[in-house]
Amino acid sequence: MKILNYGSLNIDYTYSVDHFVRGGETLSSDSMNVFSGGKGLNQSIALSKSGAEVWHAGAVGTGDGDFLIRQLQSAGVNTELIAVLEGKTGHAIIQKAKDGGNCILLYGGANQEITKSMVDEVMEHFEAGDYLVLQNEISEIGYIMEKAHEKQMKIVLNPSPMDHRIGEYPLEYVDYFLLNEIEAGDICNEQGEGEALLRKLSAKFPGARIVLTLGGDGSLYWDGERLLKQGIYKVEVADTTAAGDTFTGFFIGGLVQGMDAAAALEWAAKAAAIAVSRQGAAPSIPSRDEVDGF
Image (cartoon, rainbow, N blue to C red; front, top):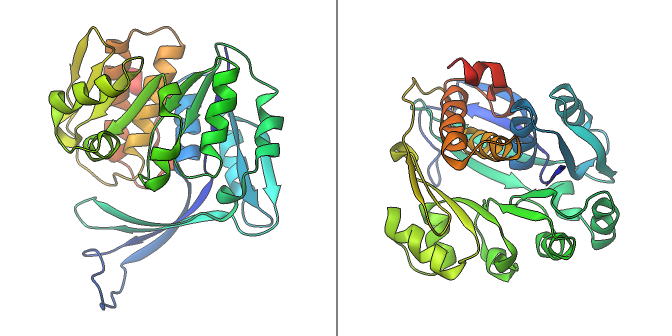
């Protein structure tokens, strides 16, 4: 069983600030760091560090994205399916406030240059029963889902960042949704919270398993028959940038490696707690041994 993560590759420019910049304001930062990032890259690294075997597909620009590929390789991710295209690699400008919160501005770059022919070539390497992990930071998501469904792959969707394109995707093909309450409300066209919102989303997509993240209140899981609740592990927060991606990678990684949903949720919560206690996105993601010993 293979895992294909068809996702973004970003360069993160992270600025430490007293507060998020307001309209019309010029604000000096305390520091600036450059990290590897992108929800796709972060989730591939988390999947690999969980012990799962993962292939990353996506694109970087010429000249500025090589270190992202090296970062994936150093984490044990297979990078043969990453394309190098003319132009710039996607990047993010991240404001990190003193309380650990973040505010992110994205530029798609090569992430938005994925074509149908590129997708066709990538999908030739996968078959029925393999997992496909998707976020919403690259082009041709809908087409990727169509091709994966044709192959009877298991589709995992983290619909972030949420935008108008989500409603255009064949969401009925999704086997696992991992999302927060705002994203779930947008998909349902009706805001809500907690278990009630979880059941609304399940009624809309009865064939899907759903993990609904609740911030400081942990997460909920529903598979149509069983409701699971998982709290957070409280730590001193340094940077929340990759918390959700770490959670996703360890949850799916746990399932693929034979864990049941309850064990995978707890494992993912521990991994996310370690990640938020560290600086940066990809560099904050812990190893399997660190999570097991937490």
